[in-house]
Length: 252
Figure 1 (tube, rainbow, N blue to C red):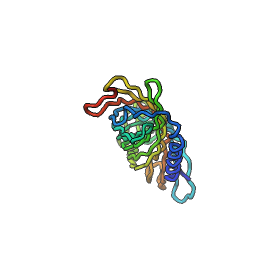
Figure 2: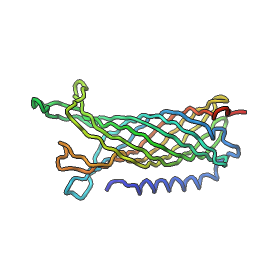
Figure 3: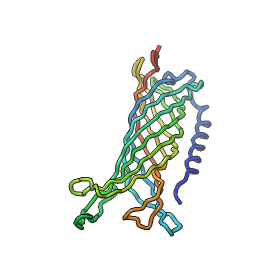
Figure 4: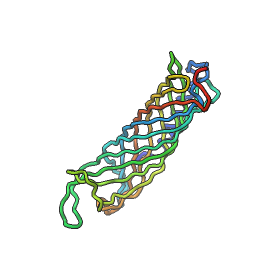
């Protein structure tokens, strides 16, 4: 049976419990100078794919061993003070794109019947919102933080077929497109550094669990019809530029 939304909710509850237990150990008694700042950044990610097919007339799901994609994206957002020196909120909007080669196989050219060695690629285009709580640990000009939060993402998954030799797209093959709207659970850690009065930087690692595909597949590969679900376990490295609100400064 594939993973479900219950897994996401359980992970969110575990993250909330972790924050509530860890918060009293934070050492900062000073307001965070970067709370209220704006952020803009880029990230690179590597996702472990878990796919499940359920064929018509068969009760059980079949696990699919898929290749794993790199997905690259950008974020824009803002941080918010919560009235607690060691805790802040960050809300971001993001967009990303990635592709991965799923394998090579022969297809039949419909006009002349020739066998063509082709490469199948999965393509991901995503956009979404994420909100994170940051537990802060300032030390020697840096602020280290642990993050946990939730998000909501729209994912367009599609397939393209290219010739294995020249990489030319085969336009007569239609792999279809599938939309998914998925919640996500995000946990991570990072560090901030104030560069000067008006600029700071932030480097972070984030782990995300989300669903990338849910839909019905009907084509020449699955003429009987099949339901397909896919989940991503994403490891993400993100670099942000942190800027104060208009007229503001990080140092007085």
